[in-house]
Length: 162
Image (cartoon, rainbow, N blue to C red; front, side, top):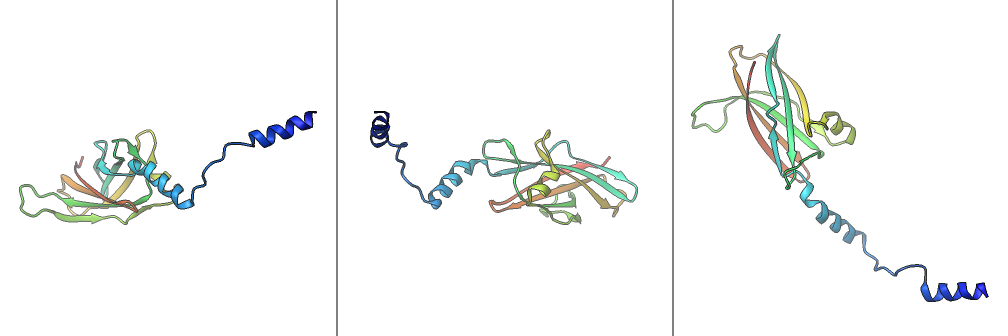
């Protein structure tokens, strides 16, 4: 009798709901659409960034924030390109004289990306050294470019040198 009941339940109720199968491409597009708002859409140099004169040059602590389309700081793999310029006040020239360009910082792997990420600050932190080219330098313009598969973002900030 129990065998008959089990057979009836299996054949009438089945093992579950029949679902429509989806292709791998459909799943990929669904995920891309779902996460599209969380990719970086803005970049800024944090006000906590600083520059100071040390023996033999300058030390810069740069904090970079990547923001998604909702205004939240996010982590994302990519390349950080950081350059220092001597600012020109009231000049028709759009860019000032470049003082120094650091090697590109590649933050693609999870381990490398995480080594620069400061979770408490929700920003990337870079401690950079710049050789002394001019001892009378009182401020410098920092230009940061972030390059990833989603595009390129750019920002600038003037740092006072202590």
